[in-house]
Image (cartoon, rainbow, N blue to C red; front, side):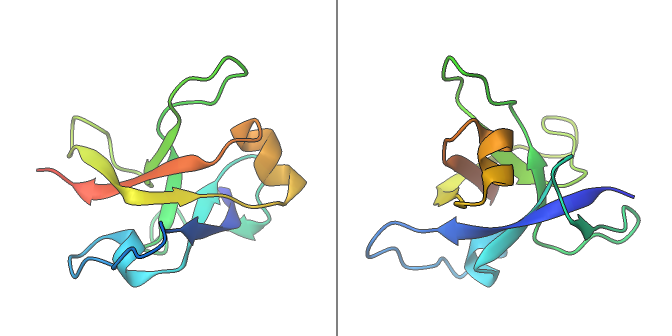
Length: 110
């Protein structure tokens, strides 16, 4: 079974949560699927706020984002950033993200 980390969602100051059906409008955290995780996720029935890395982090600064878990980007749908990031001071998150905040791509484009 995949495992995930609990990671808070960070919204900009003055950000008003959109009233649309996206993760950042309904939750204050995500469950980030990664090898460092400690929360078991049922792949057949993952929680709605489960996400996975869309672009792997590197030490040279690639644009990193997470997307809804199990969605094939470009095949099932396209997701864009709704204005929020995810970040955690936990060392396990830092190892996954190479010490960077990660853009939350939870706004479905089609």
